[in-house]
Image (cartoon, rainbow, N blue to C red):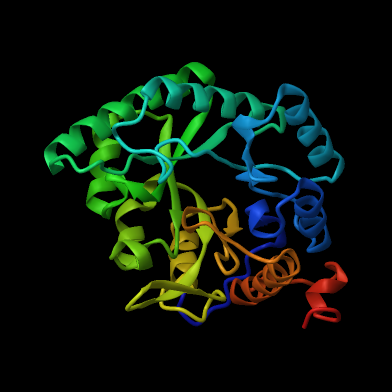
Length: 300
């Protein structure tokens, strides 16, 4: 596949993180259905992670998601993320993982996003030792629960660079630990997306689409293709190496959880629609016959 050939990704491979489109479940399901998607990735619903839902609420979420005709390829958990550190309670982390797995199972999902524990100020060697110990425990628990952990190139020891990620995978040495690659996370963490991806390609099982530019005040996120994250080149590389999973939208334009940024609901929804349209164009997705919002008749 040359750099000039169209990507031609099929529409069924595009999905998105629900709370990037709307806070509530009804809104999340409606917008993904409206955009012609048949999959949704759950992170929070009304500000709650799936592990925080009651048994009844989790069952209701599953029923409504199934009725909406949406599959769930991945559930994003807070395990090992910016919400904790290597000093946090590991018992609680394992409990969150178990509750997440139970809720995910209700929607037929057995892949859970995790990270590998931010530092709490300890020396690098101690951080590495404790982070890897925790990842081994998580992988062992994942085997018991029958789920696969997808480590995102984000917060934690394993997200520092491609070399850290590979070292983590080699030392944990579990088929229950694979990777979620986010095209735009390197903007915030100081590496280029394409070289990172080349190093970790064999382990990638899910992809987040994010783009932006580095500024003096940090990463500023943009529509896909308008930043410096080389989104199209990353997708091309993935396709050339046989990746056939989902490309999941994570705009970060109006909703940035780790920064506490919460967008106006209307702006959030409209921004998500615009992001989906632009991503479809970038990935060469044929939108013929997909719902009218793709045509921009209301939000163009």
